[in-house]
Image (cartoon, rainbow, N blue to C red; front, side, top):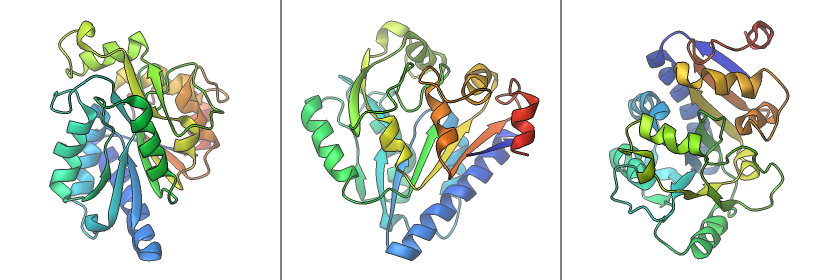
Length: 251
C-alpha cells in the first residue's frame, strides 16, 4: 500500500482519478473490458468530477459494481447509493453494464445474484473511502477479515448513521436505515488495484487509527495496508494525525 498526502482536495481528486483511469484503460487494452467497483459519498465528489473529465476511457467497455446499499430504502431516495451511482456515474458516462444493489429486494436473492456476477471474472479496480469510524464499505468495526462471502447484510454502527446525517444525506439519524448490504472485506481485497480517498478533519482520527498501527478489525480500512496495489489519497487535514514515521515511509 502507498499513502499520498496532497495539499488540496481538487488535486487529490485529479491524482486519484489519474490512477483509476490508468487502471481502467490498462484493463481495456489487455482484456477488452474493465470491471470497476465504485464508492459513494461526499469523499467521491472531486474524484468523480475529475475522472469524468479524463479523456480516453471507453465507458461502454466498463462493467460497474458498487460497494453497499441500505436495506429498505427506495432507489429514488436522495440517500440511496444506487441513485448516487445513476446520477453521478452511470448517466454521465453511459455505462450499460452495471450491477446495482437492490435495497428493496429480498436480501438473500440480491446477494446471490451479485455474488455470481462479481465472481464471474477478475475485478480490475475498486474505489473506496474511509468512514469516520474507519469502516471500509459498510464493514463496520469489528470487521470480518476472513469471511468467504462476497456480500453480506450488516447492522450499521451509530457513528456511520450519524455520518450520513452530517453529510446531509438524511435529515436526522432516525431516518437512516439500520441495516445494509455491503461487499465484504475479502471481496474488496481481491480486486487488482484499489484507490482510496479521504479528506477533511472529520476523517483524521479514522485515518490515524487505520494507518498508525498494524491492521485490526477495529479499524476496518487498515486492511488496505496488506494490499500490494492499494493507494490511499489524503489531503493534509485527513493526514494531520498520522505519525511522522508513517508519512515518511510513504513520502
